[in-house]
Image 1 (tube, rainbow, N blue to C red):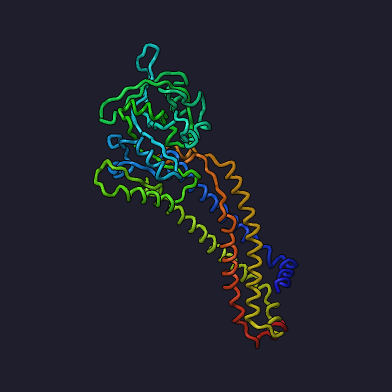
Image 2 (cartoon, rainbow, N blue to C red; image 1 turned 180 degrees about the vertical axis):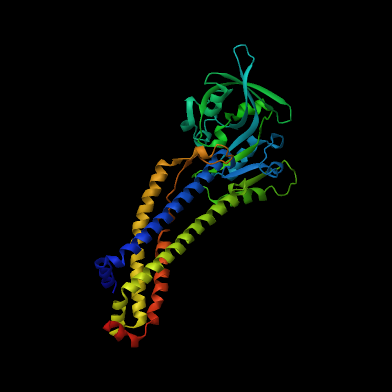
Length: 424
């Protein structure tokens, strides 16, 4: 039967060409949108993890209650011993301290007087420790625009856009004006050794990168840090796994009410990411449903037109004794064959477009000038295992629904009228 139906579809292209084109276009759009959404979500997670949240983050209880507002007055103490404990109890993660700080970067002239100043959003990371993974985390080697990376104490990296605004270049001196852990004023001289561009607007406006030991000394934060970030060694973030690690750590700390006691938070529970990621997942589901409904309506109309064109054929088949149920099922089987072919062609077309976007990306930095979100300025897709079969859902469901509705008219045909129709 399948062979018979297949021959009929191949020999009569008017029965299959238009429906296959509709399915192909709908499936291609579904595959592409899914890959684009997956790429956006992955970029959102990876960018936030690398620059802000880690896969898990440890901070003080008081800091965690600040809802994203960072204050070094609430910093973690005893960081070195805490990291040793974490390496022992959670050896499947890398642990690294970070300090976030704000202030002014003062650029002196040849007489040592202030030439220019600019506000900075600084981040101190572990760059001089041979075993640190922070250079890879922040992609610093790829981010360098001019100069070099930090190799010695009292050296700074600043964003390339910020450097151009201040009129500085690698080799120039700069003074960081900030506040200490205890609320006092902090002044520290640095040498700018390189400029970087991360491709993230929120960072490229005024980012400053320094070694964590230098900032600990400058801000009177010896053996202290704003936070400790944890990254799974396989590089993969999984919500359930991160939550299990956080629950295990927090259960060992729950007997204290000290506001400076450490607490661990998973990526999903920081900066409203759970709501954002949940919303994006719902949008992806809604997009697939829209394609199913739209394709079903179009294929329903195509099925109605096909039934009108094949009115005589259907009448003959009923007149020679073919049962209505059997005829109805063959029409649905035809539609499923159309759905399979259209889904295959559409999936291939969608994967080609998604692969291009995954490799090359689209720079939309002009739309992100005022953004404060940690998201890359280059839009990329991501092909996942789901991408290979997601298009078959609307492709098969829509063709089935469309043909099932259009074919209901078969049961309304009266055998007594068939011979009159055939005489015409």
